[in-house]
Image 1: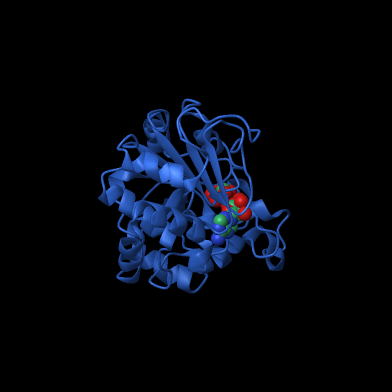
Image 2 (image 1 turned 90 degrees about the horizontal axis):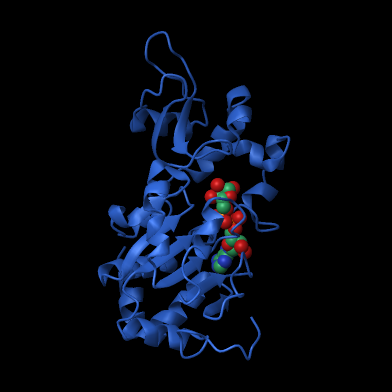
Length: 281
Ligand code: APR
């Protein structure tokens, strides 16, 4: 969008104007869309950042290509690379939610969070205190796992045990022995039905926040385009992504998402509450 194109809804394309919009009470159905970029500060690598991203660091697993680690066909042939990675990614006490996760929890606490759509599988949204009924884990999560043949759920404690040893768990139902896989969405798999059931929430948004995602993977990447063009959209990301920046009320906050969110919290007068809540996690 060119500098001199006037916004349709905001007074100007700035965080101060977004804060005024929220404080005016006009933003009551905020929809947030997140990706791995909001968990990098927690110590969980994202996927596509050039040097630090997971896909740049899977060379040791000699995969045909990095995404194979999340490919169902490859997994069935050779589940070892995934389970080597699962040991790194598996949620546990060692990862804490970030300031960005806590900001979203504040939105929920203030009755402003219409829905959070996340691509992350680290369960940090739940750990930050965001109510589960306001979270759509579009790419599943490590919270549950099952046999890919007989679909029998596999017990979490057993799973933790196998993952800790980077060993491949197999179904223990007699006569099955199928591979066990966490309920995270692999390439080639359908997204959870919850994604399609809740997708309408993105259309109902009166403010959209996009945080820490490259918007490379569909159908999730289409979410920011589902609201009316008059709905302001704020991008908290190191780089421009998707269609963000092309609409009249797009506010681009390029840089570290925690820093961007802290700036918005300052404008809203929520900064102390944000830091206190984050410290007390
Ligand atoms: N602050 C802001 N932006 C950040 C930060 C940060 N601290 N760290 C990384 N980013 C940005 C990167 O610049 C990039 O644009 O976050 C984005 C992360 O993009 P990806 O690594 O592609 O992660 P994501 O968008 O979640 O990937 C989507 O791809 O591999 C599949 O299913 C997997 O859910 C994943 C999907």
